[in-house]
Amino acid sequence: MRRTTTFTHPERNAVEIVAALRSAGFEIGAAEHVGRTVLDTFDRRLAKRHVRLELRTGRAAELVLTDAVSPAAHVVVEDTPRFVADLPPGPFRSRVASIIEVRALLPFVTLTAARTPVTRRNRTGKTDVELSVYDQLRVGGRATGPAWAVELDELPGYEKPARQARRLLDGLGLNASEGDLLDLPAARSAAPAGYDSSPTVAFAPGETAFDGFRRVLAHLATSVQANWQGTVDDVDPEFLHDFRVAVRRTRAVLAQAKRVLPDDVRARYRDGFAWLGEITGPARDLDVYVTEWPTYVAPLGEETRTGLAPLLEYLSSRRVAAHGQLSEELQSPRYLELLDTWQRWLTEPSPSALADAALPMVDVASRRIRRAQRTIIEAGRAIQPASPPTQLHELRKDAKRLRYLIECFGGLYQARRRRDFVKVVKALQDNLGDHQDAGVQVDRLRAASEDLHEHGADGPALFLAMGELTSHFEQRREAARAEFAERFAAYDSKDTTRRLRVLLDSAAR
Image (cartoon, rainbow, N blue to C red; front, side):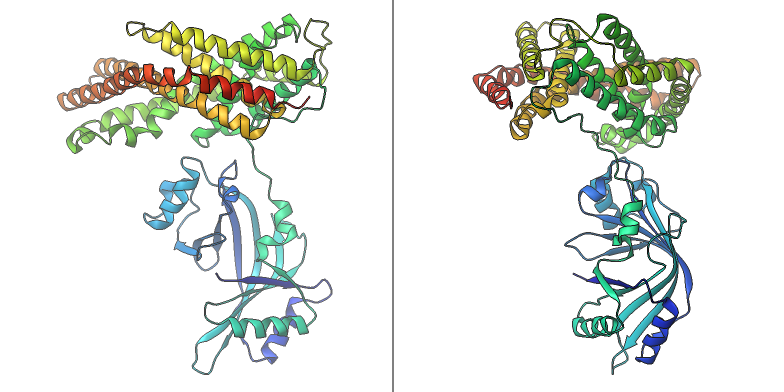
């Protein structure tokens, strides 16, 4: 792996360092204005995998992808990429896509400077040392941290010359630190931490149910607000997804707060967040349809995929319109008042004298989780081969509620036990989700077919192609329905009962 070291000193300056390097036999190149920007997703998916995607600008623009084990990858670009599709096809794009998926790339920290390239050649004329002297350093447009720095980039196969260069810079009294400019404290502190979508909070020993519920809800309110701007601006589909998940979790926690939070508070905000769930649904459904389109049509023939092009165009335009309407709703007085009054109540709540409010949080949460599990078992056992799809949909919602409870109150239990049980719930939830999602897609196709017909856009090729796609979704729904009995039997088992008992017994009291 190539090693990079950065040198600086508060009492020296770049001009005298360049002069010292020239005297030592180094070649000094022409200075140029450069920029270096770290790109990552809103939730820092690259950073969490210890991967850095950097945009370097100067005479040309290139992206540099680095991690702790692989050689740096470089690709020349014309513009700053926003999505994976903006990257040139090839291994570079595939590597980034496997991590960020559909999320947008955002600038997290930008550094600008005047860069002077400094090199030294060996007896054969080959460059064996590369240095960069950066002057007029600015982070995020401001002069913070060191005003200049020297970056030594060790070339493969030339470790000895790099060590000699390090000794030279040490002899000039410079302070060395491992890493490059973007690893300097000034650059690291300028980068925001990124968004963490985890709903789990830490609970104090003996914390009351009233305080515990309120803190969980306050944490979820932070998630709603964190994803609000990205949803309004339609930055990428995950903002709306995370917004909706935070809303659904809030509704689930409020539903379980009976005898803990005041009834009028629960009723008012359950209605308010139900409205948010309703208005965000259409845009999210269309997000899924458009982003998952390549997966949906992959099993179909090329002629069918070509015939479906007008449908994709229609769905994409509907998606844009749905997001525009949602953006207006999320900036309306109704939304702003809902979130403002909700956050004020969470900050200064009215006291509660209800029966469970003063009980230990762990006791109330465990009781609610057990009840949610009983609901799933009873509802699942009632489903028969002839049961309507609505029963499976209701069971799916029950499974979501249980999962949300375990995730939101997960800080009460051991993390490993929590993950172990959530994995079991998710296996059932995935099957129910496949069944429901396929049904939603069929309904969407039928509605689209009617709309396209009204506008005279459903020619024979599109009509046949849509019929084939509808048949494909119907088969997916039938396959998920056929698999349900086996999935539920695996869930309705002694092993699941044991896992839940172990989870709840892991609570610290």
